Image (cartoon, rainbow, N blue to C red; front, side, top):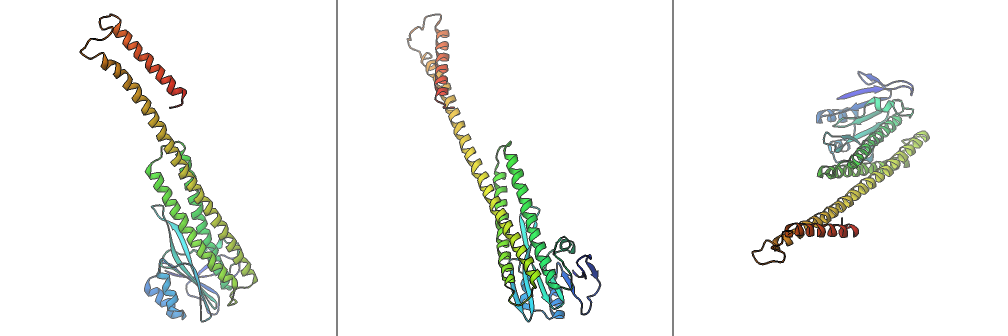
Length: 311
């Protein structure tokens, strides 16, 4: 789908246009584009087909390309799937004269996301549109990190009162995979932002360069947060692994004591069950004496085990 948007002053809302205005700034927002739509955009706007075609590659990482006074900036947009996995898809931002393009074969950036930015965005200054899209992209990654953080906290709290299951460990593997995937994309985005910050092609003015510094700082803060979450996941997993091992040891000790307590009476009962002459066999108190002696031995063994903290 192709939509045209205009925003003439920072205080205005984005206005959707039926057709792009001549000699005026405009934002062409292409989402869920087909091959034919991509080809049409390339031909009608004289874009580099080799660069634009890379947007179809789902593994394309953030990078910057310059060709014929046109800037091509690859970004990535994340979303959480139904299975809880974080999936990212490439988004291509293009600055060509008074036109700004965002092209993707998946869901893109809606104008409402850009409206939340504090940057003075207008379609007359296409560089501000690019900065707004970049800031919105980083904000989407921040939402994913916050969602993952809540998931880690909820799982940690639940494990305090519930027995650990294999599902819990599998969940932590998914969480670690998501965080590592987000970190990889943010690292690539930070490298791309730093290259834009060099401003070798005079794409940005001073205010935009300061905005790039803010975006880079935001990414660095997210990377620190991700590292903290990864360490939290590792600490929780190690802690519960230690708890599980300690619980197993305690149970084995308890089972050993019970085995001893059950085996001792059988020694005496088996002895007096033999068909041979035994001491006190003819005495009337023999049965009670044997049972009482057995109980006394069990109590002594229990007290000794308790004293030595065997269980």
